[in-house]
Image 1 (cartoon, helix red, strand yellow):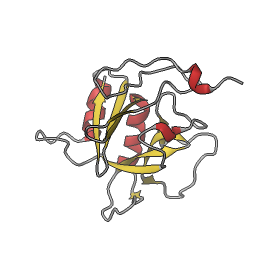
Image 2 (cartoon, helix red, strand yellow):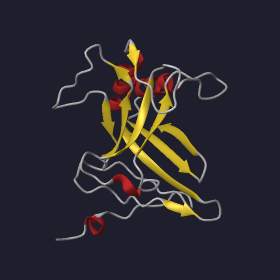
Image 3 (cartoon, helix red, strand yellow):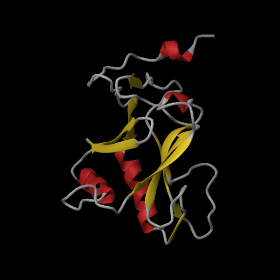
Image 4 (tube, helix red, strand yellow):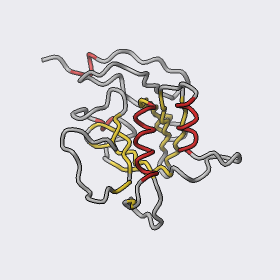
Length: 181
């Protein structure tokens, strides 16, 4: 049996110390996924690519929900996306449906990163531990008061097709950057 890591395509590095994962067709083998470590600053970086239309639908689900689940250490209820890394890696709505039941065939409130669907081993993304990181949809991202939800809506209206989640992790903090194209 061939080692799946030997089947992965080479990934170009656009920045020193930054691994970019380009959009790929749906396969059972994820693209090259080894985040690079910047040993001078003890940082790990990665970029995950998500289909924008599905991310927007997931965000709209969270925004429209009457009730929201709280993440770890959260005390204020708000519409959020959760970036989850366990069986693959994906964005998930924290919106709670009134019945809180899900269709077993399809979870409309979840969108996997390209190449990181169910059954893929996401341990190489920023280290081996599973996690869930909350991403607020309604807090302004910068001085112009644009929220992530507004950014997603505008990008989709302008024809963008991808949502990139760039993560930088050091020993104490995780920084996320959002880009659409």
